[in-house]
Image (spheres, rainbow, N blue to C red):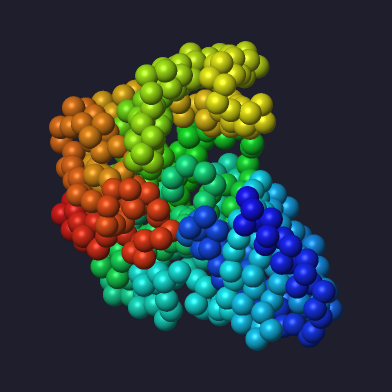
Length: 442
């Protein structure tokens, strides 16, 4: 604390010196081992944006920016944080403090826009050696916008719909600075397979739809995408499948079961094959273990009680009260943290996911299935879920990839596999190869 206090004193003293400081440009630094980049501009008034590349967060709009001589203050309302700094006389570095609850010393140095972005060597770049078309299709009164790609050679193609994981995501399933669906679509199309990927409800060019949409609602969006492909005269309508990642894998299973004459095959990438409640309980244990803080017996009991309470709930108001009672009894969380968590846990999507059991659909799946998982996946654990596939779908082909995480990225260790944004590779080439090989074998 003494060091931080000294830094504030230095900022005050340095602020007395005044010269024409040049703050404009890109500035990189590290806060708690997390790289950040400020882009500071002065177009009649000062403004700034913030990037957190490893978290896949770019162009976060900052609030008020105040420059006085060689000092700068940047307000970040979205993060409930501020930055105070003083620029060196050579204008090449800024010494300051990032304040977000606590004050963290930080050194910013100049960089460029290009250098501030993480390297993503697999991200497709034009010109493309295939046709790419912006399309829209409807699911009732919801309009979904996407990108359709097809090979140049040929006339009628096998095709797939890409369905993203949980959370509203764009057609590239963009997260942590990666674009997995753009990479998958590019690879498949280069190998003779047409691909449709689309923005989730309320993202990009897609309309929002209702606020209480659940996994079952999102499954109807995926079927609307299948129907769109069937309407095209350049698609082999006997070979249309769904590739779903994470929750998208569950959606693939649901649609294969409920539309057996329309879905010809499915591929699940880290798809849940056990009840949502069990997925989330397992996830809590794994995250704690990988962080070096395994759950105690009492904590494990609390986690189990929370998800069993949600699973048994019939009324959102009563559920909120029950969850509040469980969480308050632990004494580990502030009232604000508890209320924020409860708000998520009583949402229609969350409750429906906890209750949703793939076992209801699996016996009805008769089409070819390829189920894929990484051994270092801590979100949809491979042993738990692939074991359920083996039991329920003896005809499914199953692939577990050693050392790959939830996004099918390779990494140096199990713990490092959690940091998706720090990993340069978007998806294993072996996974891409196996997808194409399996589709062509059907």
